[in-house]
Length: 226
Image 1 (cartoon, helix red, strand yellow):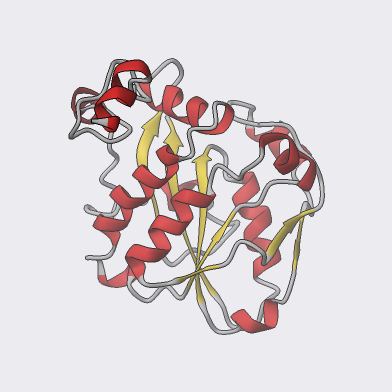
Image 2 (cartoon, rainbow, N blue to C red):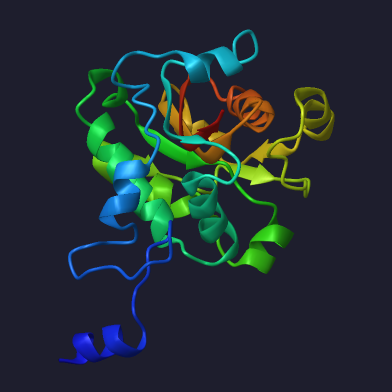
C-alpha cells in the first residue's frame, strides 16, 4: 500500500528516457535497455580498448560495456549519473557487466578493483564518485576486493570528454599518488572508470599503480566514446 502511494506521488522514472518505470523495471526501462549500444568487446575478444592505450600501458584485459556518442542514450545516462545524483545507474551497469565478466576465465583472476578517483574538492562538491557503485558491483561479481583509497588524485582537472588527445595529454601529468601500495604487490588489479576517450587519465593512473611491485593491470569502463 505504502509503495503504491509512493509510486503515485513520486513515480520512478527511467534514467534514459524519463518515462515512468513499471514495477518490474529497475533504473532503466525495458525499451531503453533494448536500445543500449552494447560493445560485446569481452565476448568476441575485440581489442578496441587496448588499441587506445597501445604503446602506453600494458593491459591484461580491457573492456567497456557501452558505446558513447553525443546526444545518445548513454550520454543521458552518464549525465544523470554524474550530475543528478543517480548513483544507482552505476550499480545497474556494474551488475550488468559483472554478470558477463564473471563467466570469463581471464577476469576471474582479478584480486582488486580500483576506481579512478576524484580530487577531494570535486568529491566534496558532488558528494560521491560516480564510479564507486559501478566498481563495487564489479568487485562483488568477481569476488574481488574493492579498494577506493589506493589512488589519490592530487590535481583538480576539468572534465575532458571530447577534448582532442594532445590537449588531454597536456592536462594529465602526474595527477595521482599511491597510498599503501605494498599491500597490493603481485596482485591483478582492475581499474574502473566511467568513460574512456583518449585514455590519458587511465594512462596516468596505470603509471602510478605500476610503481607497485609485480602487479598486472586490467581495465573496465561503463562506456567508450565512438
